[in-house]
Amino acid sequence: MSTSAELFKEAETLKRAGKGAEALAKFEEVLQADEAHVLAHMGLAVLLGKAGRHADAIRHSERACELEPGEVFNYTALSVTFQRAFEGTQDRTFIYKAEEAKTKAHELQQRTHS
Image (cartoon, rainbow, N blue to C red; front, side):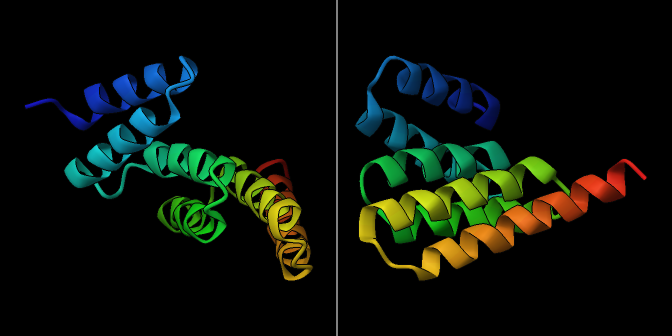
């Protein structure tokens, strides 16, 4: 049986090769092995957003933030996920949420550099 690290590496390779559906399945396999694998949640957020599955993308991006609440990049990625959801739906709620996530990222950035 492969470890979550090995599965993640396979998922990233598939993603880079443009095999989105296969990469998506492999990222889900990573989470079956380790639900707390932040990078797998982030990888799924990207792929699901590109597939127009914005609610699922947001759920995974938010989970990454829950797992690593002090990580600036996770909130920046969440902001981008919300922006893509807005682009796909034109629901202005996503813009406000994108701004909130961006603000949180800036706040965390300030804390780490003060």
